Length: 329
Image 1 (spheres, helix red, strand yellow):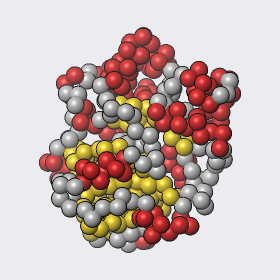
Image 2 (cartoon, rainbow, N blue to C red):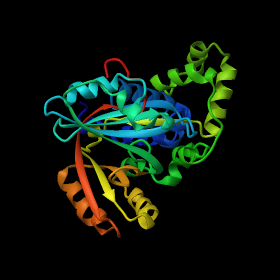
Image 3 (cartoon, rainbow, N blue to C red):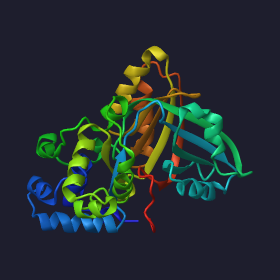
Image 4 (cartoon, rainbow, N blue to C red):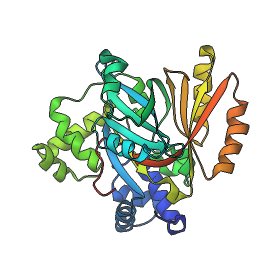
């Protein structure tokens, strides 16, 4: 684990810039930060090598054949680690987290809605240590991204504006319609899942295309919202040690305004309307338990129409956004 004291202002500014555009050139970032591109490159490589951050390229699909689920898997105490590790090895898990003192695992699965939840749950590891499973289907995304840039922002919006890509972004891409990736994009997405900043020459070698074709295809996928670049972070390196899931029950007539208000809080990294026993799920990130308590009582508690809130702390993040785990990480 990287000590928060080892990250200086330039490291934090660089992280913010990469969250805005993970493939921004070192020269463009250096111009925003007022440092050389060599300095940016050196800082980035150190942060990545230390496990503080990783840029990943991810496909975005929103068709009748693909949907997104996340599961709460309740387990026998002491067995969460093994079950989480088994889920993390699967290619169809987008992220895996250990919750509630090793008694619960949260994971996101990509599945075919025509299969139904029974087929989805059948693909879980066979284990007598799994006590119960609750499946949620994402209905509408209110907030997502690299653990919420509002929380980690150290530069004003106008300073980093030149880095903002001319695409619709993650939420518009997920909630809207766009052209879908084809079979020939499989190798491209696999390479970008390992390293979202992979040079075009490396991407060309992975796909068998020319560099110009790869460059054109990446830009096309980004422009249509079919490809996004996310930032996987070790938030503890930035001083945030309390990550907590919240499940809220809200009257349907208030779901949209409450979801939007919740997503606007800087502590919220992820918020979505869901099916299941609660209709609004969110992940909050705070510096410590006391800060989360203040957030829960003063901000969440003040939202109109919230009938019930359940919380569960994240003990450890096993796998993040990319469906491909990096060896040794």
